[in-house]
Length: 356
Image: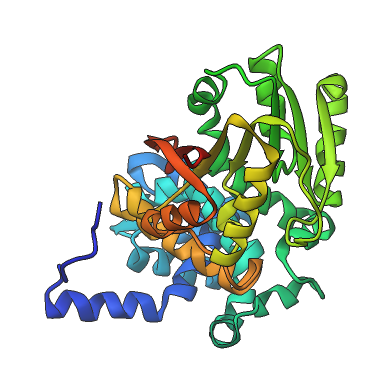
């Protein structure tokens, strides 16, 4: 659905919204501080009767000045209401406090993206992830993942898994409908898809293909669950086109993976998948295309996530428009047999085969 064909705001609304954009970094940090300092929780616990700034200070043992400026900011942001000097929580404040999607997005934005976004403009001009330098000398975020600070790694995986894991119960029956005996899981990360697969289908054998740091994490998780005999590992840097893929698979699975690469790289990966796949096999691609969303806010979230790829992840990928993506599939000698939209939070499943 295309939400972006008309300018819906009046001139006054547009100028008002421009101020929100101008102060957006401050709005973000204030909202996060209200959450993390437990001020929103204190206000919520007070219920309809509300709570004063002074009472919040006493309850949380925080200084008056800091609490006052945050709570007054919370009014303008729309997280709090104030009547007779008593503060209560708004619906937006509730979602900042309790909504899992909002928490995953906020923690990811702060821990992974915020500082690196200072370099976005430079990255746009030269096509490199300039913001990644905040974490060290890495070419991509994927090489850095195993080495990130624990809280950064936690926020990255929470964000990644929130968007993909919710889809697994819906797509498992679709992927295993044709009873593939062997499946190549490209970009297997911590092994969540492989674990879900061997639990769902007693006959399938999974091969996880990923970077050494990721396969090590996945192997640890899988060994602990007792699935070592049903999952193999193939360490590889998929960007190195001289390295071949393992061959002879009935199915290939890529979940929220190809959006991590440029158009040229996606074509290269898909061509190698073509060689890896048995003639009657299928490639399953699970992706959150921003143009396939039911709600405008979902498209917005994906468009903003694209800028994470630009500044932090690798400097050349994004959350794609499906029309762009379909052309890449065709160029790789594949064809889409089936498209299933509205899976999980935001995903589309593409079932592809070798072109006839």
